[in-house]
Image (cartoon, rainbow, N blue to C red):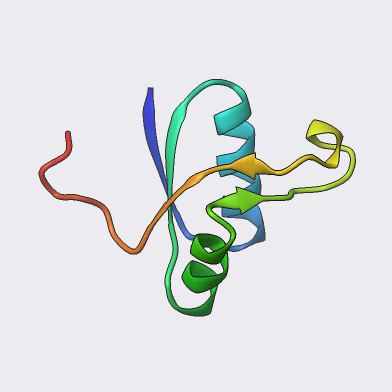
Length: 70
């Protein structure tokens, strides 16, 4: 399933990471410094040590959604 999470704050990022681990195609929409930080790390998100063994989860990151995508 394709899912867009609009808002890359702590809650949006945590939901996006959990959805990726569950097998979904997720795009996390971020802006400003948060967008820069996430793209610098290649979309690698660390949620907490108790989630995914503390290993980073790769989440697709974009500054906006593509309006041509269903």
